[in-house]
Image 1 (cartoon, one colour):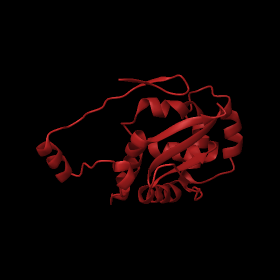
Image 2 (cartoon, one colour):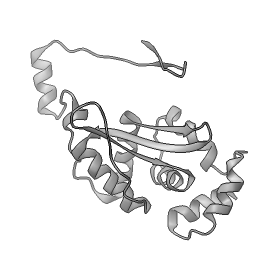
Image 3 (cartoon, helix red, strand yellow):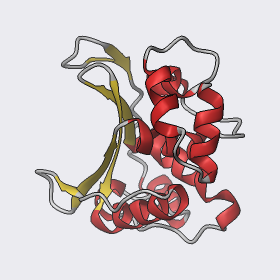
Length: 178
């Protein structure tokens, strides 16, 4: 079905309704739950694949957007427990600050948001570096800021700002933008 966003963009979505009690019961035995965003807990995942899980979760319940149509921003939403753990992994893996978690109008649902070229560049490369699967429409929102073969006007500004950082992911950002 089509759904129109406030911005006027049209997005397509698919919905499935299951009325079979047997099928619902079988799905629940395999970990499928109703209202996952309100009660999901972060699973125990090996370190070598956690960024792929982060990217997959983000593709479902996260978004890239441009603040004031030019500054990249990252946001993910979910249960308080899940997003708290999600943020901790981003902080450790991307050397980010502990941003404040933002409450929503829904009980037990919060979001984490990172803004600006420095922090978003770190997250971008953490999630997409050397990966084979991602949601194209989400990555495309900010890829022009962080990929080497684009003519983004922000690239020159980022090269100057990022050149003072020496950590792994930021060095990659600087190299890709020069």
